[in-house]
Image: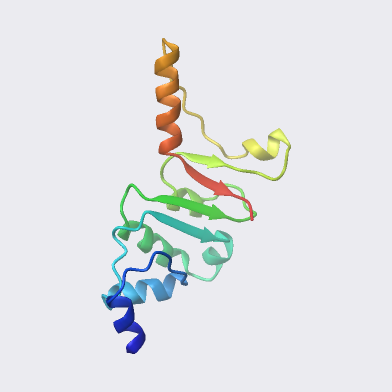
Length: 135
């Protein structure tokens, strides 16, 4: 109970938690995650196997739509990742092969008639990108 009271009385900059425990804290109103700006998920695949994926999706729906999500893991694009990361995805890879780096990546083509428009479009797409990095 003291633990819950201390969470209610402060606004932590960082919070490390399992998805289930975080949802429990939200349901007890011990913490408000609606203004979270950055969500980091480590090893998404084990979460999908142990049933935590539904909890993770609930967390994702509870936070601001403008938040950034980073997923670390040794996985290709899967339905679990696509559900968690509905926006554009940038993939960082340790494997240098083109085949590995381009697996399951969708493309969006923008035609820009001028260099300034091209730069603005590139900067805008980087600002809205979500990163999926190997661990």
